[in-house]
Length: 359
Image 1 (cartoon, one colour):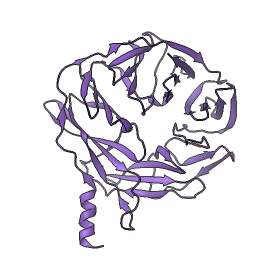
Image 2 (image 1 turned 30 degrees about the vertical axis):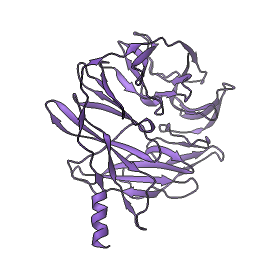
Image 3 (image 1 turned 180 degrees about the vertical axis):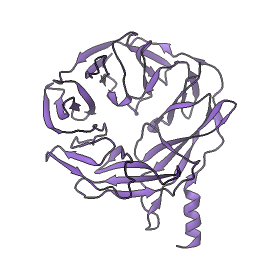
Image 4 (image 1 turned 45 degrees about the vertical axis):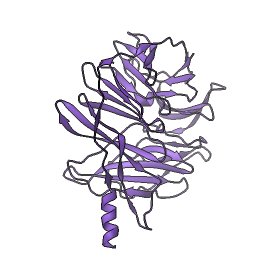
């Protein structure tokens, strides 16, 4: 390889963010808003484990406690058994509702043929989760954050087309130094795959940087492409404590960061403004990454929807509700923001699938 090309490749591997910013001012709680709701428990026939929502078809797919995988049209409300799945169901689904995926693995189910396919993922380190990101046209995009020994990380980005035997490597990183590690953020929209690093701490603050890999660039001068971690200039921040979770709203150029801090516990920033919210120890989850909304929950405060751009939130469940726990994958907010699907963990360790109408 020509020396100049080699130097160019190395220079493109990591594009650093500009100088980190700080969000000035104190924090306060988001203001209240009236959110009228109507809850409708869905008849799934048994406790569920996971679900995903197919918006175009107004239907749900869910895995029951018996490991049976079901489809259910919300027009008829009747579940239909598809197959058996003895591992978690991924929430990633194609726009035509033709394929279902095992979470963190290379098993794909064709609804049309009724068959499972276990496709080959080259260079995947044994035991490393295959994290599904999104579909684009006929391709599924996934990423692996693997270990190369001595705590050094290597990232592989893949795309797979149903019918092929093997996934294709879009790009791979060099083996990264031990002190240069990336975590995958929540929320990805084609073509960008979002990562973050918490690099240093100064005066009790954490330095958070957001990076993206462009999944549309899978060849460079006819050669395999090295993954380029491109710094997102307007999302390099000093935040007021340890980072607990990062939500990247790519299409909105927005970022929500949950922080362990007595008052400044949530940062919201986009290209126009930033602010801190005081939400205490509430967990934050994004039910739809196309909308600047977080679902917040704690046993003592109940559940609410926080509208980040409006600095308002409305209650979904009051404090003391019989919920033992809830995960981001247990939530789905429709694009018209009129329905929220949730499957909370109940005290008896069952999960009930509920449709909440929002008015």
